[in-house]
Structures are given as C-alpha cells and as structure tokens.
Image 1 (cartoon, helix red, strand yellow):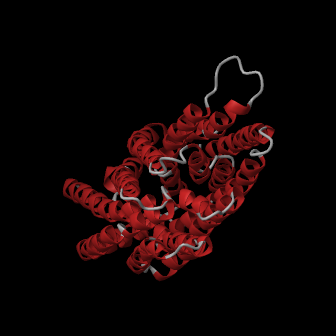
Image 2: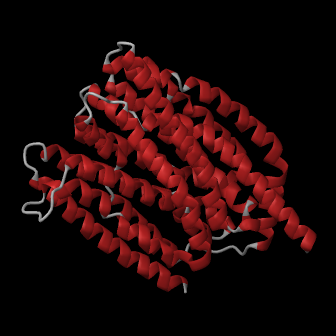
Image 3: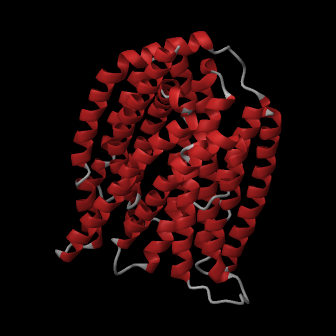
Length: 415
C-alpha cells in the first residue's frame, strides 16, 4: 500500500510538471495575444459591442463545444489525441500577424477558442486521474500556477514587442502586427514539449485511467452538480470581461498602447498567486470556498462604474478605478481557473467526468457570451450617457446574488 501511494504521488508530480510546461507555452501564445486583441480590434475600428460579443462568442464556443469533446473523450478514450490536436491548432494565434481585417482576426481567435474546447476536457480528465495522489485542489492549483507563468510571460512579450515597434516609428497597427509575429517562437517550443510530454506520460496516464475506472462507481450527474453548474454560469454572466476592461483602457492610454498588455500581465500575475492559495483552501474547506469569488465578482463592474455614480463623497479617478478593476479580476480569475474545475471533479464520477467537464464548460462559456454582449452594449451606450455604467453595476449585483443562491443549493445537496 505504501509503495502504491508513493507511486501515485510520483505520478502526480510528474503529471503536474508535464502538463504545466505544456500549458506554460500554450499560455505564452494565446494569453499573450489576448492581452492585445481588444486593443488591436479597437485600432481596426471594431465597436465595443462587436468586441464584447465576438470575444464572448469565442469563449462560448471554447467552453460550449467541450460538451461534445467531453463526450467524445469519454466514449473513445482518445484523451491524448484530443489534447494534442487542440494544442496544435494554437497556430491560429501567431497567424494574426498576417491580417489587418478585424473580421479575419476575430475568426482566428474563434479557431483558437474552438481548439481549447477540443483539448480541455481530455486534458483535465488526464490531470484529475494522474494527480489524485496529491489532492485535486492542490493539483489544479499548482497546474494553474505553472500555467500562469506562461500567462504573464506572454503579455510581457506583447508589451515589449509593441513598445519596440513604437520607438522605431511603427504605426499603432504595425506595432501589434510585429508583436503577434513574435508568437511563432513559443509555438515551436509548445510543439516540442507537447510531444515530449506525450511520450513520457502516455503509459502511466493510461494505467491511471484504467485503475480509476475499476475503483470509482458509475453514477449519474447529481442535482448538486447541476445547481453548481447553473451557479457558475450566472456568476460568469455577471462578471465584467477582461476584454472590455482592456477595450476601455485603450481609450485612456492612446499615447502608450503598450500599457494595455501590461494590465493583462497584472491580471495573470495575480491569478498565479491566487490559484494555488485558493486550491489549498478548497482542499481544506470544500466547495463552500467558492462563495468568495462569487461575491468578489461584483467588484470589477463596481470599480469601473464608480466614477460615474452621481454625488460620491470621495474622488473617483477613472484610471485608478480601472486599475482596481484589473486587480479584482485577477483574483477572481485565479479562483475560477483552479477551484471551479476542482469542484467538477468532486461532483462527478470518473465515468461521467469528461461529459461533466463538457456540460460545465458549456454553461461557463454561455456566461461569458452573455456578459460580453450585455456589458459591451452598456459600455457603448455609456459613451453618450454615463448612467448606463450604473445600470451595469445593478445588473452585476443581481446576477451575483442569484448565483450565490444556486451555489448554496449545490452545497446543501452535496452534504
């Protein structure tokens, strides 16, 4: 028994490192691009509603299609094939360097989000079964930490690329095209670590999956799972998207556009700290820990709308509160991308985990689509009438209150 436990811990740590490095290079590419895409779309004259809807649609497809890919993963057990295919399609992001049409740019972003849908349920299932020896909360938290190293390096590369092109006389459009071209380098490195990880992890991962299917009892998705999934959808639908925060920031930093990717870097840096801490808290206190990010999800909209609330008893500088919204979003994101996924593993059996992640991701992505569309529309309207930012705050508060109610029902059903 001791020998088996030691083997499980060793497998878990190997899996965390292997998948961590795969995600690290993947995040350098697509998180780097995401730090610049809203600004680039604004430069290409796309309105806030289009940016919010398009980015929300990309998230919806990126999460919603996981229902299909999760089902395929469970029925075919082609976990590695789906994982490799999904990461290989990240090539669409460096290809942004070849277009100046916002429609084509959005198409390439949607391809990358679709690729994420292909790989994630299979990858998360592999992580969940190979890291059981160290605790799922810690495993997903540590994986997210390595993930976020890449997610901070990527925006730094983009900011550096934009700044370098700017001081060399490039136009704003040319600055971003140059920065996107730099992402071909980490893409080549991604392919290398992906294939190396596959060769190293293929057999032990297959053994862990087989063992898990013997031990775990087949079960249906429970009411607690459905309440939890609905709670997360509403929570996400009421969270002001980082893409729209960046879009707003673009209008404030018109003479120094390289600052906008740095704001995204701040989000990812905070995420990197919040993820392992929240993962450890989840392992100790369970699903009730999620009430914290649900409540905090009010803050980004509140901070962005604060300067537009009439008769405030204190000064409310737009730039200061935008930075506060970025910090708040980073904390929430760190929790979302670690313990939100860990809870799915604890609410589903191994025989339903792929489809469980897929259905959860569909609801999660729908929340992004709703948030991007509604809040993007309100952001456009606020240009001529700032009262619409107050409406955005009310919208956010109402949705978060409802989401907390459904989270409570999920917790009560699990006990």
